[in-house]
Structures are given as C-alpha cells and as structure tokens.
Amino acid sequence: MTMPGAASHRGFEDSPPEVLAAVFADAIDALERGDVPYVLIGGLASAAVGRPRYSADVDLFVQPHDARRALALLAGRGFATEELNPHWLFKATREGVLVDLLFKGPRDVYLDEEMLKRARVAPVLGRVVRIAPPEDLLVMKALVHDEETPRHWHDALGILAAGDLDWDYLVERARKGNQRVLSLLYYGASLDLAVPSRVLDALRRRIAEGEGVGDGDA
Image (cartoon, rainbow, N blue to C red; front, side, top):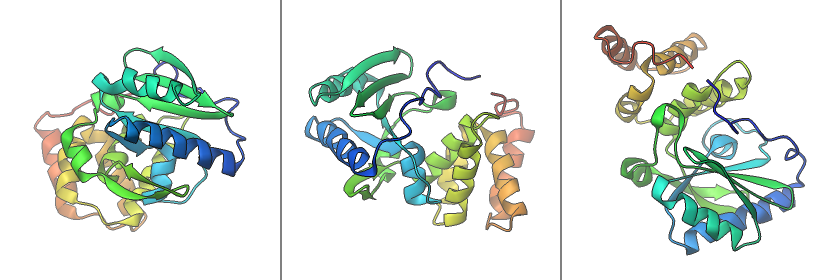
C-alpha cells in the first residue's frame, strides 16, 4: 500500500548540488537550534552508510509530538511548508529543494530513544548530521520497497554490503517486518554478502512461531 505523498518528488530532481547542500545545511541547523531530535533517513542516509548514489531530496525523521514544531522552524527559515498527511508526513520546500519531514515510518516504525541513542554522527553534503542507525535504515528500506521503488531494495543491499551491523539489534528491529527482512537477507546471502546463519535462523523461528506472518505484504 502506498501512502499519500510517498513518492511525490516530481519537480525536485534537478537542484544544483551547491543549492541542495546549502538548503540541507539550513534545514539541519533549524532543527538543531530548535532542539528537535532527528535522524537523517532516505537516500542521503543510505548513501552515507551504504552504496553511494545521488539523492535530490532530504528525508528527516522526527518524533510525532515534534513534527509541527519542526515544520514551524523550517517555515521560519523561509521554507514553504505543507502538512501533507497528518498521520506521517509533512513537506517543506525552498529553492527547488524538497524536505520530507516524516514522523511515522512503514509498519508503524517511529523515531524512538534506541534509534536516537544509536544514531551515527557523520558529514553529509558538508554538514555533520545525525544519521539513523544502519540497521534501522535497512529495515525501513526493506519494508517500504515495492515495484515502483526498486531503489529501496538496492539501498538496503548496499547497507548490508557495507557491513558493520549489530546483528542482534537488527534481529530485534526486524520485528516490524520479519518476512521482508528475512527475504532481503536471503537475497544478500545469494550474492555472497556476509549474513550470519544465526540471524537467518532467528528470523525463521520467529516466523514459524506465527510472529510476523504476512507482515511483508505491502
């Protein structure tokens, strides 16, 4: 199921890199100065921890109670803002750059304290930012993938190929989509990517016990 607004990036694919970087830095600065906890997700985050690829839009993940405050902070920086979907997604645009402000992910994934604690701090587009843990990115990418967005599957494989994963944490976070994550890991293993057999066994057992059966259906 594709939620409203999920793929509406038309008209935001051609921002010059220097404009994207400047607007990105300003959006991050607005949230940090406003003390809004966030992590970077989406294509820019996936490129930072997995496979390099270009992404012309910015995806920021915040907690639901902070979403409107974050949107107001962006409006204060000259962004045109829209409460596109009150259940999961607001949008902000400036100088042809789109910022998706998400506060609920696929299968009711939320920005929680564990995700914030494990967030990585690294430079993206010349600005040091908080990036969602690669394990959470992998799970979200596996869950949101569908026929129209194969990039999500390949992003997840890129994160898997990069390694440096906390496998126990990944198994725990996979509860939101055991079948999808297991499918991705099997596919990665078929490409000779390193996937511990104990991780596959743990997800198989969970599904066999009835947990997460059918959770891969979109």
